[in-house]
Length: 330
Image 1 (cartoon, rainbow, N blue to C red):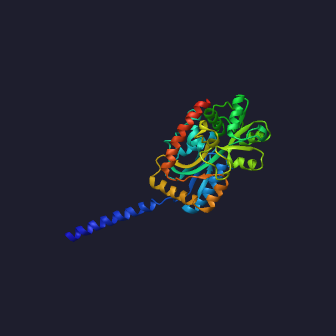
Image 2: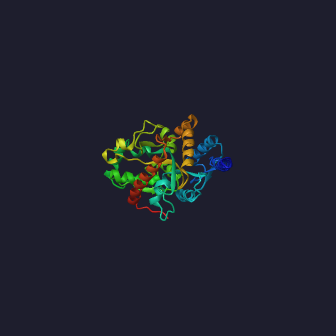
Image 3: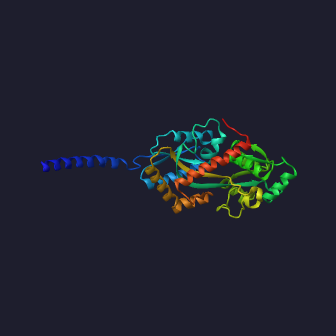
């Protein structure tokens, strides 16, 4: 009888082990292509960086990582699609300051909340903005610009790529901190704004350092300051606005950050796989050199917790600036 019981128990245990084996196999991730959503059109800096990452991640994960451009509404269409996607790790997004922070206060009726609708994966880094002016403006520093503006308030203007864009809000933040009254001139994109600056039709603009770099080097525009807490590795000779702007501009920091997120509820073990894969890719010489040449400042903290905290602080920061600007978009 005891022998029979042992045999039965052995059969049950064996069956349980056999049933568990497929479950373990099914838990392998990823087993199929991963969709990497970029909430902007093809051809821009965000898209270019995402495609570099996707190529390297494909090798790292052993599965295709496919870039899916879902542009529109300042990045909101793509972000909303990811927020509503199945939380299984197979849909992730390469987000930026707009959809992951600024748009929360800028757009009415946003269907997602960047603080609660996503699981953070990794903070990739940020692209510094830089304040550039037309060469014949007659100023050589941020302090000289402030003095000139205050001597005749409202006489100077700054171009942006559109209402609510980071280049617009950079000027709003500058006015609020420095006590200036620079007049905002919105354009439909960075290109038209920069073209009019080069033609001398506007006085200045805040734009990303990658776009501005060739014009700064050819003396077609004059760089007064980098709009970040520390100097840019790509152009270390340019001081920060905070350095030369006096106490009023201490802490002035406007940059475009890049982070990878997944839908809320994505399993922790899959987030860990993705975080580690991104970390390994970002540590390769190829990716480091490529991104550095584009002006990207890599993050020193690549933990998901860091990105999650950073998104929350950025949402709060830009809520105050948007309120000050008075701009709301539908």
